[in-house]
Length: 493
Image 1 (tube, rainbow, N blue to C red):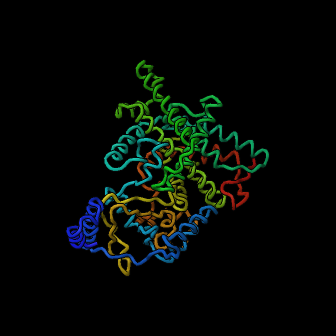
Image 2 (cartoon, one colour; image 1 turned 135 degrees about the vertical axis):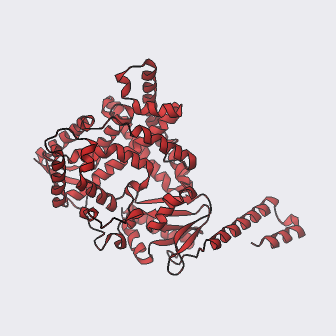
Image 3 (cartoon, one colour; image 1 turned 180 degrees about the horizontal axis):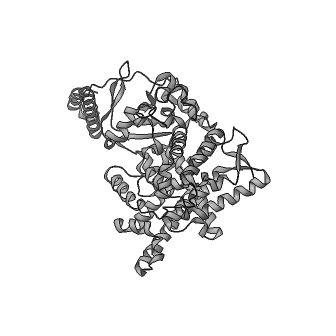
């Protein structure tokens, strides 16, 4: 609407307009003109690649995506769309525009060079009930503070060698041995989730979840799983997240946060009593409290670390074994790599892991094909640009208006043939040797380049190598039982 015409109409007959509506129209018009001028200044051009739709409000797009997701084929459904329209495209829903990118240059802009221009949007509100204040629900300076806060205690984590993992490894090996003796089929993913939950709780709480009594252990695990699942659904509802807040979800969130709060109380009590060596097991909590001076904020940060440390590592373990049993030559070379580094040594350390090059290739390749966050969305907190995607050739900058969403399709970017070669869909860890991917840059996002995930990665690299260590592999041989089912394998002595 033209500001001059609006002003003239209002002056001629002020009773026609509500004052607040008129002022709002003036402000919106000014903002739109200002943003357009910003785009012209930065040589922005309109995008030509737009996902077509037929129903009003693009409801047919929503329905097709919902149907694909219900059939557990959402990513496969999206693949031909990107192949047809290219690495940058516009999507319109209910009259609002947003962009999806699998262009490394644009990914770098959103996550690095123009990071300050983007925020979490409604994702923060959707997660807050479960996680509280922390790196997954914060933007700007608060996010920076949490990132810096978590880096320090992770540098001093107690699990510098295998000893702290032995009891958890024994549990998983015992379970697998039982199945192996029976020649039975086992779903590894739940075992990996229990394994990483045990190691992560031991790291941040000072004792593993199995040290709780039976009823308490089940309650904590079940509450954590349920709260995580419902939080994921709430995120998908975007600004309407509040419409799905079941009473069981509220209780599950309270249970998890109460558990974390109990350990904060224990750590602070030990610090006051100066219990010496016993106090060391709460070092992670004490470090956080020394900075935050608030038990509630410490509790929230612990829950953030718990979800980062457990979920990402368990998923990576699951996909790694899923791929290894389907590629026995890779499995054999990985075993040889681990054994050649360890030799006759009995204690596994971080120094050993740094020398396991093929292990790194396997994990990189697994993260490439099955990234932890296959699609992530950031929302512009100010008017900004994407460096590429506009114009007929897609090489000009794109104007991103304040409030617009930019989806980063990591899963599809990692499978681009223009980045990874004609065999981009194949599992080939050797592609990470030599210079083949020396310039991949932002075309590869392990753990989505999220600082919280990188902290968790640092703390849990031992988690990833322990089940692959010779001790565990010697017990069993793995064989895929059904390629249609993730991680369903038969075990034999």
